[in-house]
Image 1: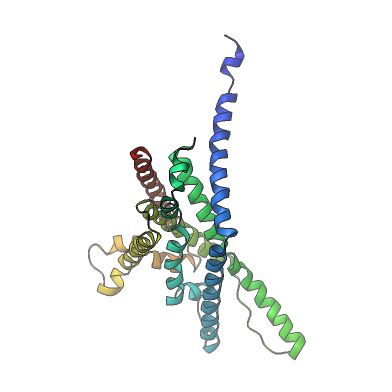
Image 2: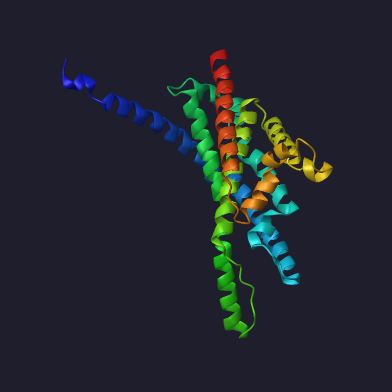
Length: 278
């Protein structure tokens, strides 16, 4: 027996092969978002709705003094919740349901990859595309400065309206959007894995998300009662409001990371059932 028998190289090789398979699935899925009309249509619609939300917020801020940053008012209106909840079924309903309908899922599941690799690769691609949808928000403070500079050069000393950039507000807002989005995307994958119809997957996803949203609004509808703290704890509405004020809390992070891991594990079990049923 030589020292080479105890070499860690096989372990490194298995690790590299494991993540290599995930990267392959990830690249394939990400291309389906970025190199097809579907992904660009979703991006254009989200950007248009974000712009509409910004326009409504600026009109409100011009009408009188406000006490919070602009991100708070952009995320605390019905326009935001309309496109925020509906973007998840659009992103995830094709992940497993479309492959099941086309018959390509069987080939993927019989390939030399594990179910966990398939789920993680698809989830990572969906999460990457989801994060790209929020990148235009980072340009708003810069575009505000450019617009004010152009106004000053064109019309002289005319007061503009700069978007106040408070790092805590923007950091908190993006952090909670990524945390909530991480779990909502995993729910979308779960719903897509349960059916071969994109429409049914989308309906299941949006129905689950709307139900969860209204669970967090129970106290606003019926007031405080003994179980109210539990509803406050799960309220994504209150969490986004708080984080967009710069009040970062670790409890929602623990909640959504735990729910995301559990939901992905459940999704893996469902896909495993399909895999061994064949």
